[in-house]
Length: 321
Image 1 (cartoon, rainbow, N blue to C red):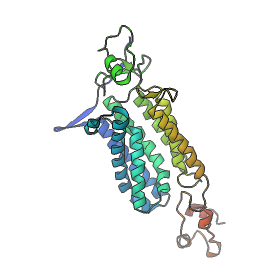
Image 2 (image 1 turned 180 degrees about the vertical axis):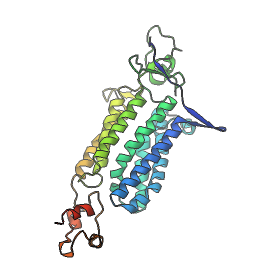
Image 3 (image 1 turned 90 degrees about the vertical axis):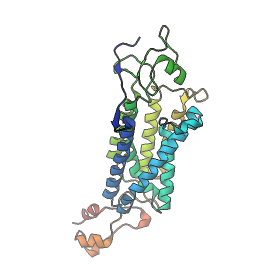
């Protein structure tokens, strides 16, 4: 039925007796890239204390992602407690919620600004997401519905294999007439769709990183983009958790819409800097400005904290005639 699809084989790197899957490598690189992006962007904005704390926050994110992703898989997808100990079964939305919660607790304990971290986290998560989804491709997981067009992919060793019987049992997809249950079906390579869309999200957020809104606003943009990306992708995914009461939408789509709505609210609440809602750049001290020779004492006028207006040293220097 499906002719000349791309045949996928899982990527596994054996280091002695230890097999390292492409998924594990991708996740490792995803968190590494997220750390680099976060540290450099916070440093660029003048928040060196927060930049130094990124490693601790990242550890919380890793733990939250692993625990949240696995709990979501067991509670929402399989309903089998035994799956807690399987190597597979880490769901993105569960990991996202777990990561945000544990990061919030860690940042709160350190008495730092959650909004400040969140504003750069959107950029970092998008970058990490684009890389992390290559891991799903590497092991043949999270593929799409049966498809026979250009770039169709067959996963004979996928997780699970894209055989007719496997897709019928795991995703309730009807076996086409005349197709043997053992036939390997070709499907949409939705993992690669998400890699591309994740990179597009990163580019958009990177372009907006110098925004003039209050800290946290950019995370709202990320939430909208991430919600829309997942909502669209789910129409192509092989899924069995679609609800009649939600017009056939999947669990992930319902969550995606909720995340996008939350993003709109965050953007609205953090639209303008003000009291308790600073802009993204650290306020330079008067002493630092005077020491640099950029401004004379009589011209050293800096907006008050109540105004919420924040200027970088270069911005203040540009005001000097």
